[in-house]
Length: 135
Image (cartoon, rainbow, N blue to C red):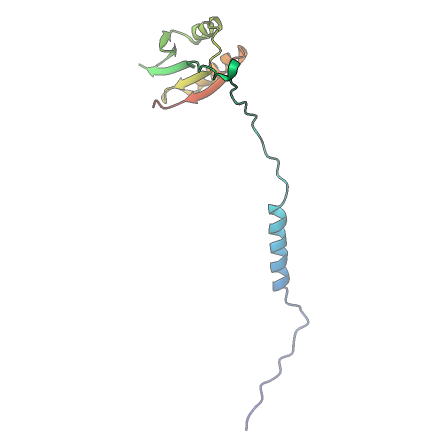
C-alpha cells in the first residue's frame, strides 16, 4: 500500500534570513551615505601682469642636500656651502621671491631634512616642493 508522506510539524521559530539580508543592506547604505569631512587645500593660481601680459617665470631657488664621503653637504643653486646656517644666511640676503625647492639625496639621513625644514620655517621661508630624484 502507498504511504503518504508524513506531515512535518512546523516550528514556532521564524526564519530571519531575509530580515538579516535587508538589515545588512540598510547598514551598508547608511555607512556609505554618512557625511565625511573633506580636507580641501587652498590653491592660488598665477595672475597676469599689467596689460594682460603673462608674468615672467622666475628661476626657483634650490637647496641641495648631498651625501658624500659619509658627510652631508649643502648647496644653494649649485653654490656649495659648508653648513646649513650659511645657506639660510644666503637665502636671507636673496631678495628674489622665486619659489624654493629642496633637493635631497636618497642617502641623506632624514634628520638633516627635518633640521633644514625647521630652519626655513623659522625664517618664514615656504617650500614649494621636495625633490628626491633628478630628471
